Length: 336
Ligand SMILES: [Zn+2]
Image: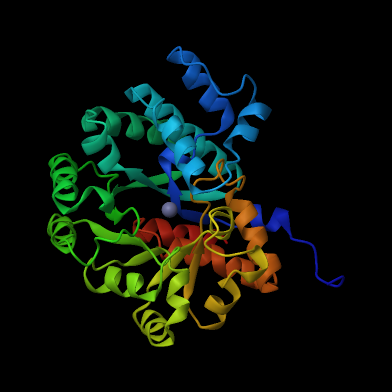
């Protein structure tokens, strides 16, 4: 398509926008990874940033998980969490993000690793505060529950999260589908989170079909869906989501990297927009997927044949669908 205009990178960067689907633990860039390895006396998988970037390029889901958890193994102290949060927020700010909602793997830290959640939280908050003081970027936290550990473990992680509700904690999320979603009672964990004043979101319909999305809406009461591309298999569900204003936080680069779609050209993003779904763009685990927030805007531009207004609408969606205070959102929208 020779006549397709080039991606307006400067405009995309200048648009005030939020990133609502990025995992704190998956956001660690090569320079930060090398710094953490050095701090803890761990031999890194490569000695320079280019080598780390190469190593992060996985070839299949098992090696993705292996790298993800290798990075998680470097996150040990409050300082580590402060550094990764600050580093990513600075990076997001450079791309024109005014607000980030970090998904934090609370089940992993609390249940699997037995970490001191107070220390994790204090570190993340310190990093958010440092980045905000310097750049003005706003940030909130979404502790995610992991279904593969079972519902009892989800409740145990939630107990700890709810015991220390820092104002930056705005929602609870479900980290991903598992084959026990319909057999175990995760819904009551989300009821408890709502009773404590938190919002609720859920990963669903990434690799799996539309029922996952319906389950996240019906049982978890999810207000936003992370990914949600599987919903496109059920037009009735899509119509319901349009009706109820349920946004999908979509990450095309991640979907290609993890083979949720065969190729970028086959990504359902254009169909989602055509169907009237509200979409926000996120980078999920950017260094692992060799992507960035702006790269996702470029994917959307190319895939959906967007014009400047289309790009602007995606940025506005991310602000409107965020859980930031309404006066902040109104301010950002008026800058646009
Ligand atoms: Zn995700």
